[in-house]
Image 1: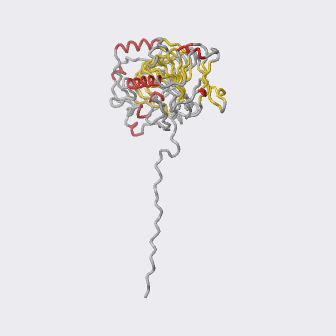
Image 2: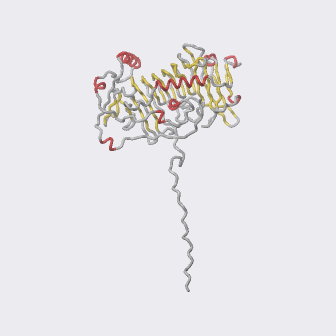
Image 3: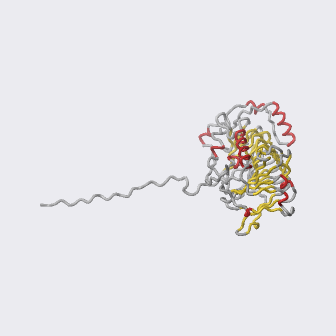
Length: 420
């Protein structure tokens, strides 16, 4: 069950030591294998349709080089995010896109963990207020990638990019990194890692089985209200007032929506969200009614509390690195089963999405986490984590306690000797 852990935590950038770098040659390669002939054929068709630059998946040089990777991955996402406040979504809560397959045709302002990536546009979370110290990416199989992907390292932000073992990675002092013969101009020395036989950063089959279970568990939560299109008497002004409902013991408001609610082209306004990190979470179960293709025509508008007023502070789709005010999760289901069809976003959408067996086609902005089987981004998307942002430990949190100093012991009082 989803609960709040409330634990603050932090990651730090890891750089190669001078000793390690001194032992490396200037050009370093790794083997790229494990891609079947059928996968390769499908890959070239998709790459051709996306017009991805400089891609040569079948390069003999990339396949045959077997020298060591730049930095071997020595951890897993579950270890990295252990103890973080993921609000029950596990490691997926800390990635803008968490998917088995992602096709990026529009700008994606966020990080990702994906099995297969086809990216003809740039991606990475823009540094706005410097809340992110290290942005983590995991790409198991790079099929196509924009050379301007990722965000350049700054004094306050770096990236940790982990690639799967089936990619050819090279590094040259003058030209930087390449993956499958595509230059990665925004990554600097020490930001690229690669899986090995001992460590695989994310097991997608394991994670998606767990996320499917979570989606179905959430769908069975006791709801505060069930809403259909008929419950909104004015179809041009549809509002959900959160202060009408009492949160459950886990600090959540649970709302169930009939398929008809989001099918319409008029906006849906959610009023009364909390701007505070410890605010009430709102989980909305959207029953797609078993539709093979479910069209979301409604634009989602969000309004935050401002004192006694619940509709003064409207949030608009935006690039941000501040996530503590995301308290909205949309769970797309078919009854109590995870929806396994296609979801087409026809309007700007705000709030994290849990649809681990579905395919999303995004034609407009999406702000939040996007947890899906497959995603095809044509509009623009923005990272806005449902889990808490990574924050530095509070002062003194991880410091050793001061040594205990015993007070000095006064010397014993000795009576002067008696002189006869």
